[in-house]
Length: 384
Image 1 (tube, rainbow, N blue to C red):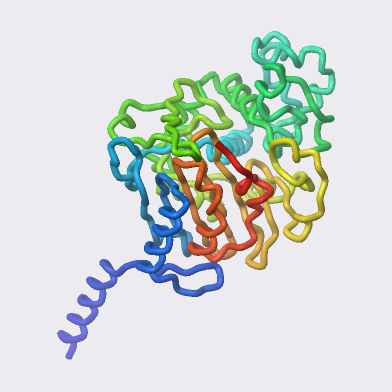
Image 2 (image 1 turned 180 degrees about the horizontal axis):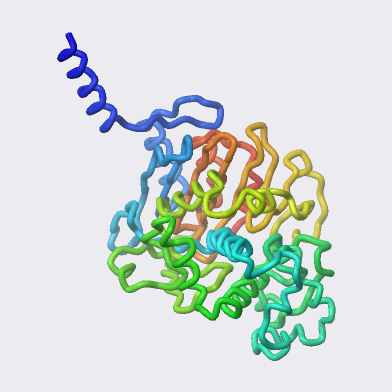
């Protein structure tokens, strides 16, 4: 009898080892893998999404990982789970996490003015010379850069290639690539290292994100995706040679999942800093996060308490507070949302701007998410 029991245990152990993970949505309903893949494929094909990588996390573990479509329409080469994709603003939460690690080491304080971490007056930096006469810049802190409340613009080319404060520091939400890139500058100034090297040492290597880099790596050349506009026109790859905290990273969805799991499990940084990261630093009450409607005030997101923490967007949901971020550029569109209390998340990465038209359907099918602020993010606005 003992021998039979031992054999049974061994058999069950063997079967469990090769059993398919169970996929569940936020409501706890089991999602059938075959049906999920069939539905996503139909959505991707109908919307003419060139390629899409999908990762679902349950119980802080990857339970689903699949790629749809192609990485190159000319060759019809299939997109797979090791294909390098441009992360765009998915870079920002990683940069924020990196910065908090340096705060914990005592290198930075979230509320010390940024100028105190620069080796020269801000006006002596060619890229930031326009701030020389902006005395209010002396009030800007890392907390404001991380929460997009510094008053810096989103991108300088939209302001005649000038960088001036467009709002008083700490008063308004203005999504700002320039602010996050300035955060990267002070990281390099204080550490004496390139941003890529600091990120690899403190984040990418510890989390075993082996297919992720803030600058293009030669190893990426063997398997990478090209980005496409909504019309299907080729945009191309993003092979950045210099690191930018706002958006130079390339990665794969399963690598990024490791990072999201670390956030949900609050690994790598102390609880006090994670609490600040996940606490609203500034409320967001505009119709859009970007573009001409970014100054139009609305109450339509009050029910989800749309706000920004330190490096991540935040919403209130029936499943607890959720973290989210988009990653958008010409030819590329990404989105993740994570529910730490439910230990559930989804990462969606696409090399097609057509992804924006069906992001809501994909969120609903993968994890049953119907509350993401996609309209505020401009998902349904027409794009080339």
